[in-house]
Length: 323
Image (cartoon, rainbow, N blue to C red; front, side):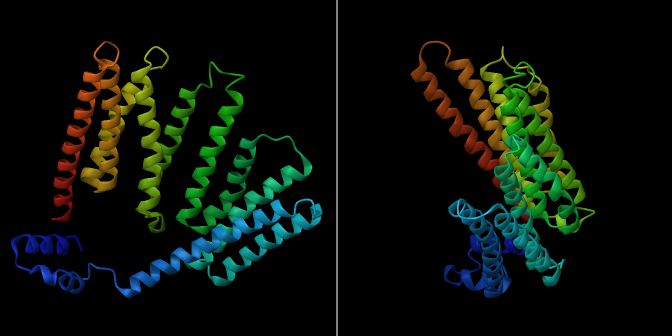
């Protein structure tokens, strides 16, 4: 597909294919999506939208009828829907997308069941314990389901549990559980999950979902960039460890997705991170003295220059990937 696209682009640029025949050429080469591709996309979109809508409907039903229903009716309704979802997973086929979507519905309703238990019996548990328990209980289903979306939900729950845990205990152990510690933890968890997922795609083909890997890269990159900008802007309050970790992270990102597993999205994310970090450094160096207007103009010009250079480089890399 990449070689076809590159060849067609070359023919378009040289005028070998007239402008009024571009669409026909793309259709013949099989590059444009066909009606079958659109039906498949719409089918999947409606399937998962229906799953999310059904899970939300159950939750909103409880919110509206909370005082009118007894606790046994509430528990019976949620547990009944979970059982039906698991039956649907079995009947529709454990290897089919429709069956896996039923397992995703069961996982979402499991969280609703845990929240219902906490609200009904007032256990006094913190919010982070809800998400941690949810992640723990859904783990066997994620292992059995062999579905990338379930693992994305599981990692998201781990991130939420960690964030809420630090928000609770930061006041008690502020000298240990600082905001920087939270960001380092989020960075470490998501980076580790990213590495394990990327390596596991060779052994488990069902994990080879680029959208999931890109979400993990986005979470890892956001945490890394936030840490390095915080360190630059407030050096005395930060530990400075990210100064050593961040260059290694950028180099590994470049090495893997430039040479081993070509991925333009990952490289673009790395460029964006470097631009943000460089802008933070320029702001620290230039905005502390006088002449802020000139400094802001210089920073704006630098951002435009870095963005232009990154775009030019990414276009060259894209051309290499397509060749």
